[in-house]
Length: 311
Length: 279
Image (cartoon, rainbow over all chains, first blue to last red; front, side, top):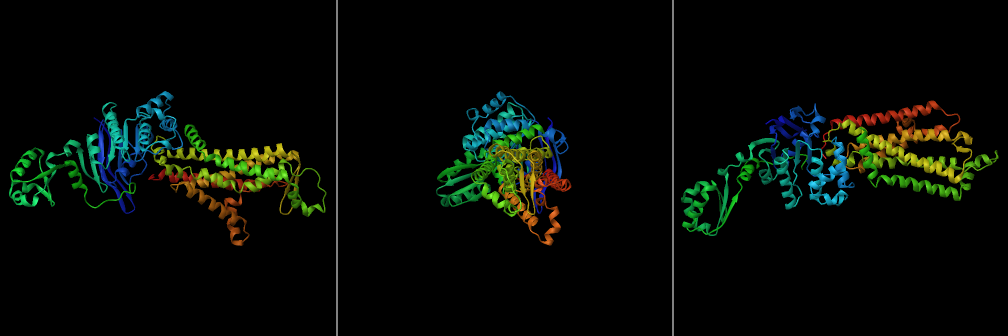
């Protein structure tokens, strides 16, 4: 596999604010690469630097093995992007928007090719409708059609599910998977939603306060030993002394009036419930908390950081 | 570049707001023509009252050429507002819609993008002037007929023979095109610094108004800066109706306006090439 994106010691500063601080990462061909971080972590700034919208303060960006700023036009011909909101010309129709951006991307598709593209994103019936009449989900789909119209090798999607309803989110998720599996595209997708990344990406980076805090395969970062389970117990006060004396005491991470939070291996759950019942606990709920979520929060719960693009 | 220009023109002429300027010019010109058609004599009497006692003036003074001159004098001061509506929207409007970031991720250079946008706003400006010329000159010629042109200046009244008028209008509209393109370039430049088009439009008009006041007020201090203000040269088209025409002064005014256009455009490209697009 070859590197499609190679970012080395990338930084961006705004006066006193370091929006991106010495980030390095590599995206291989065929990856769905997740870019995860809280709002303001520096995701949008990084993606905008990859698209030449923002000039880095330091560092190097190579796409397709070429320096981004030396070969900007050649590189951008192979890149499609949806950056935050899919903002298009509201007074133009879906067809006119798509045609216009196709020509700006250096291609002259036939009418039929454009219609096929619109059909692919489910807008066949709204070809001649002005974009101002579109719902957020339809705009998002049109934005993706614009990003894909010139058949790019690399697709960057910055928070692509923002503002979408559950069906719209599921559609985008499926589209990302299809782009990777069926059309063999490389996809960089950013989100502040952990499960979005987990469900679509094979590799990911977590950034916080502009810095990289973790990078690797999604399944490597998804470590079952980090699983958290909240156990709701009606008579917790009564059985708590017994629990304190048991082997589970060492795994308790948090306690409320009617629940305890334990960090444990998923395989230990049956034994836990059995033993709690044996000591007389009236269990009313078992709520597994995502291990990756716990990991993510543990990495990023420090002071919030302000990214000028998202705040 | 040609493709980009086509796209920019397509966007401009698909927007309803583009036609506001054409409608506004049509409304004003037609109203003035109607007023002069109904009663031009009162205005002509007022205009010529100081020389009536010494000269006998015969013939139809309120002809198409005269009406056109009257309209241009009245209207060319206000056209910058209509031009700023489009020029001020070229970058700021895209930033406001969020489309600027999409444009800037396409495989086109930022310089080409800026040049195509500026050329498109210049073409819009020229079309606006062609529309104005059609209504104020050719329609007036059709309605009022043609004849010798009487031009009243502050100290003199000049009479141009009918056969000697048309080339002056062609030259005057050519000069006006340069003057109006200067306003387009200014609003285009200001458009770089805003994320909605209201700011650059208001700023352009404010600058035109302030500079016009500075250009017209006769105070010694202002006299030092007047020659360098573009507003001091925007009415240079009137020079073509002097007798004889002072070509040196007209050319100097046109040169100063062209310098302003080059400055605003060059600076806009320089800034945009280095600008972080955060919208």
